Image (cartoon, rainbow, N blue to C red):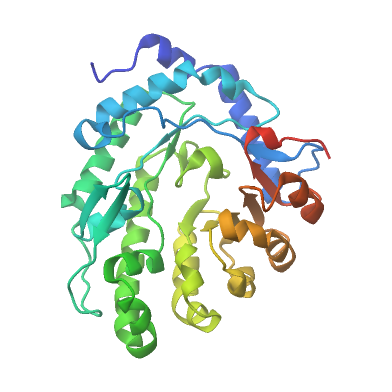
Length: 346
């Protein structure tokens, strides 16, 4: 297969009517984040990603992967005309799953039993050095994917970044539980490595922001977590393992700094029991939204009542926190529901 988009797909993915609908949804998202959305319809997102495309091409022929994704999105582009649910068309760089950064830092990263894993680094905490980003396989494949995306010259698809995660998530991947002990017993050594990691994450975000047009760039899993252009994202899931005091002293400044790379701040993904950090989350100026799923979703009431009025909540519902229950808690305010089956009128 040639690494060139068909003329028919290019035409569909540059359809001015579909682009206008997408632009209108972004305008609504901006109103929501600005506290000015007075729509009577609950905001819901049900984007289309390229899960049906063979992901192995990302590693062997990234250009081919991007073209196949684009063809797949063109075939399903009619769904993006939905005016009741935001249906962005998304190409997601899922290289190495949640171990993208571990690969850049030189970990042995491998695929087994349907997911990616990494072997921790065998170095002393406090001696971590900045990685050679340009010569890493993960970065080189990323650049090839982006080049193919830009060469396709299509305006409708959203490009989702790889999982850049956060300083704490990456530190635990690189060092295992040893970094958690070091944060208590060898604080300066831990702070050294956490800063090296966060500086690397910042550099990667800046590089990607300079490569991809802002109106098409989105952080990880844009089909469910899409924000207005100019917003970033980090993964806060590992913070459930540390105390509020430890988070405030050692991690919160790094997280807020990372989100501050983006013009409007950004989102924090949460999937565990993080309620003890809500008072800290409330004080972070660059934290503009949280994305809750699984155990974190069950604490929706605590987040809704504990966060600032300008902090939006993206919610993946399940049997323990249904759409109806979410609406009872929030009255539909500051809330984004994931999935088209959840659309309803207030």
